[in-house]
Image (tube, rainbow, N blue to C red):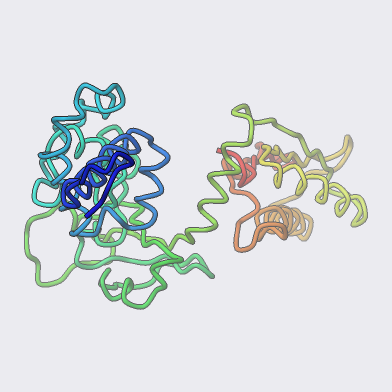
Length: 312
């Protein structure tokens, strides 16, 4: 038996109940702290059936005695409607509604359209797809999406559908499908995509445009110097407009002549140098062509526009 200072005996069961009651109220108070809820979520408590049973006990037996306390009234009662999908797992009421956003099985918010609209992994409904080769950029296939998912590292890569095929829309069951009917998919490196999105947020919304002017008889040294400057601008995400023109008095290059072939080779060389893999970003293309080469009538001037990969 327990004794107080005055010698009065206390019931040990009653003392234990009082201590448990105090712990329960203290825990209910802690549940009003979003940081504490986040810590419980990270440690996997909200996926533990025993812990969920304890929360249900608190909801129906302890919460009524605690409802007049201010912190309990702040436990997000507006989220009760979202409890329906998890009714079998989570306690119903203000307490359950408060922990729902921290549960690993909680549905995404309705306004998160980017994640809902994107067809990734098992969300790809087409039975057959074409896959963009990460190295060559060429289309390969057809493949079954589940076969690709079984072979890739799911922690590192996502299979993303980038175009819609006729197979997605048609409910007909054909014996054979042509390749043009199949949707096109890409493998996305999760880490690289995260870094790209983070860099995208850091960059200003307005894209700066730079000009690169050359002549057809530009020297190798001058060309190398100007291409290096253009590459630096593209790596910053800027737009570069390239213009190659003939100096005054330069004769017109006749189609099929050696001079005309040399000009075409110069354009191809510049494009290859400014769109190849970036040395600072592994596997990332330096730039994309937003305006293809456009020639004037006399074919003495050509212009095209490149957009750095870091910009939107």
